[in-house]
Amino acid sequence: MLRHRVGFLLIAFALTFSARATVYELLALDDLTEESQTVVYGNVLASHVEWNSARTMIYTVYDVQALEYLKGNLGPVFQLHEPGGELEGMAMIVSGVPQFTAGQEAVFFVWTSPQGLRQVTGFEQGNLPVITDPVTGLKSVSRSIPLGSARTPLFLGLQAPVTSRQLPQLLRQIRRSAVRQNQPTANQ
Image (cartoon, rainbow, N blue to C red):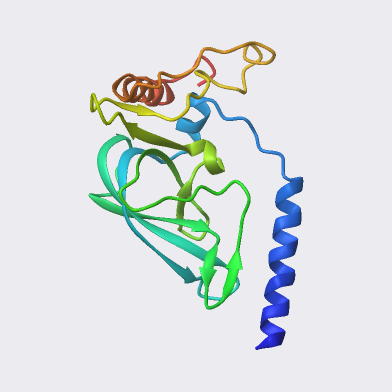
């Protein structure tokens, strides 16, 4: 048992060390929309932690209720498998991976890994937590993201306009981005 813990700790240390050296690509709204098979406004129902089948990775699995699909469709309830968590006295922490709580609403940009696991796109960039004002009941997101694509020459070095923080306007901006992704370009 001690040998397994030492081996796991070495793997966790290596993952942590490499995560610190990781450079994240900035993803603007069009980038997030393009890289995601699904974009959904949803509510986290519950979570649990589990090993992968080879017992080499710990995942926190979140059950998410879809409130509104903006791109794609995963059904009324789907699961996100985010790397990291604590299980059987062992902890695995992956830098940049979002963590959710039951009852939390968010806009999720979701991709499917080669192993078939659904995860948030671009680490925490693909998670826009929703906040409800206790007085007015109005919903907003906790942060904005740049409009357009960070991959275009015009974007580089410019202060790009950002998405609305008001939820209804943000959802409209995402829908427009999804429509743009489906339009043929001059190169096609």
